[in-house]
Image (cartoon, rainbow, N blue to C red; front, side, top):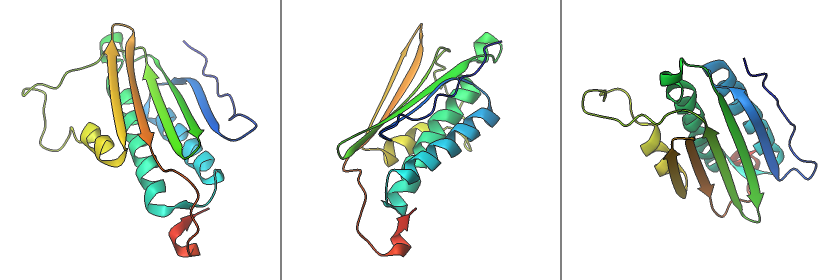
Length: 155
């Protein structure tokens, strides 16, 4: 079994990294919460934008935890990296699992909304899949602290 490692964010606060996180629902929820805490520390962020970012990241984490390793006995890891570059935020979620194409036989009326939700919440979404795994990249532009009333800010 892989021993998870949880490096702390870099000293400058512009980078969040979690490598080799066990790909299960509990670990994905923990990383989502750690990411949200890091994001709050980035400055006063508009509540709506904050919620959009955390929800999009949660969807990517949840998809990886649930689906990436189905063909490998459910055992695997997730790597997460978020980088603030000026007024942009890029979050990358990667696995070494197998991409599962949705087919009419596997579609559900109550499931399958994660990727469309990520596309609606982030400014740019790329999903690259190969035999080595899948990488989801979420980019949020014009991401910066705002000067608003306290009711509109997180932090």
